[in-house]
Length: 366
Image (cartoon, rainbow, N blue to C red; front, side, top):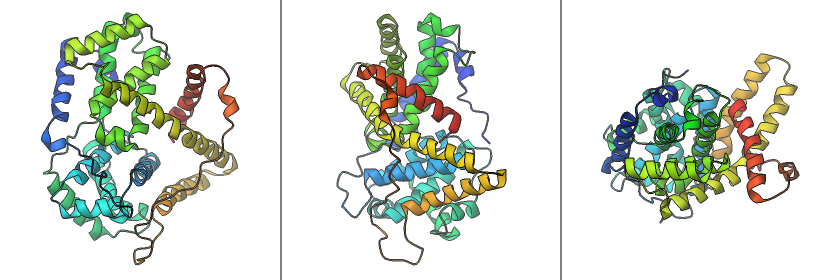
């Protein structure tokens, strides 16, 4: 269950242009606050420490947890923003340890998810649940102690900006400058709805990507995802120019700058890397559902999957000292018949596959 989201899209669509601009500028100011700055904390990471791949697997594990408990995917984005800000701190011993140890890093991520649920959700994850999903790798005292360390290190500043709220406001502004979108904001079968969902999809996948999450500003990734969605949905040049002018005049952002160009490419690469994994997981999920005979067995399978997610990341017990900081690994994704993507140019193939992926992603909440 989730709170009534103040970021609700319908309410944003009904705001005036002036209100949308004010809110967007406030978010842009927030991301420039020194309290929410991230640095490239993996630049000098040793081989035995945390890697970008390890971070990605932990982020996917958090996504498995929120899906199992029917929480918001945005909670994962907020949690990982806390993780990145915390690990960017230079003079905090626990942050330094988390950069060197996968075990500590996973504990920080679990704690940050707990903090995020308390900020965003109606029901938060209690200590017993956190211990359970970690398969008892961490005890209640470990979690409580690390939670206080993280909160104090962040100075209890828990309003870290993420890309989704900025993207939502950008789409709301887009409906003001592209007339054909404005008439369909209440219809879930419109281009507007697809634009929202494709943008959200890219941002949820980008949470696992170190470059997009740490080295880019949230606003850059947000607008890059909107631009990619516009291209995927065949917005014409006139509509793209209108959006570009509006963003430049109203917010001062130049969406044609190299930062945005590079971010768009990075989001495409993230999509290409992860779409095969998500689709193959969907295939396995559907196969498991067909084999389930009762709702209780389905629940048992889901719980096992949620718990085994952690085991695949951390293959050591609480008392084991061997392999604690070895690279994390999961099972290889099942091979997928790429001929189903169709033939033709790259844009056509990607558009066709994106729609297929979108349907699986929205309806299965992988």
